[in-house]
Length: 455
Image (cartoon, rainbow, N blue to C red; front, side, top):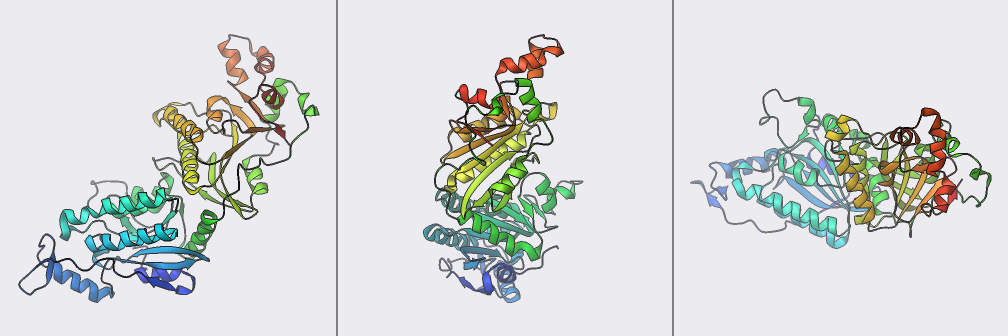
């Protein structure tokens, strides 16, 4: 196994100074059937269950498969949940549910982020459906915490499978995993014959957009500390200011023709999203993946600190945006809304990916989802057009009524080449068509699409 941390070793590895205050047991032991020796055999009378519990306690020194308490991580107070895999495979039973519900309640009432250090094989067979029903309890508590605007972070240890992955793990806002950790709904003994083992690893889940990062054991504490610092920082007050400074109306930037504007926006020499984000933020933490099986390296999403305050961002990087990119951006906008963090978006794409694979991946639905997320955002949003603005694939990322443009950008209902082709014009008329589309930054101001031009 890739992870040999016990529950308390994992806690000690992330909590400041190892100082951890354990929560009291949430509920007294419920009456259960017993065998001839008087040992409890649980709610369904599983033969020998009581003896298994006794051996697990003796072996681990724990009374249950999860340890819950409070502590500080990088200076941020948090509720910490850590699984003990040595206790019946870290399985979830009724008492596990009691402890987890108590931890979520404390996190919600004290408004402290919840950090889960997970290592579990799933629900406890010896308690039957009473164990499986704990997933509903955990899911409800997770939803209540999410609704209260308190962030949830998960670290996936080895293994993280079954209901533990499908609730505490996959249900977290930010998901980190240890290298080589076994991660998946199906455990190793119940997978289909011949199943690709790589799909059930932390690295496989990262590639499939299901987790945000794979983090080395020695870096887990620092990674959690940075994430907690970002997600609990005071949000920026009001809509984020667009990067750059306002350019005076009537400046030389109105001179280029429409086609010259397009060529300037397509130039490899102009600044890209990386340059804007580096100049704008003091530090960033990035999420990854759409949680639906895909990633898009051309869409950067995350949270940045600017003058000590938090702003969420979604930035296109100049490539055709994949369906996974739109879904990741929509995920970012909704998460920012729950946390009360305003959003900055940077538009730079020739348009949405339009190949067959993009269609199979649900391009239309993904774009619609992002349009909906931006239209109903619960926090202020600002958009800066920094390069190409190709049709609806770019507009989906735009904040309604708060779009700004740079000198070297354009926004068009369709690319000039495509417009000329549709109108059956000869290729030599593409520049003329670009001018007729009125796609330059100052054109956008005149048309009431952009609020201003920044340099």
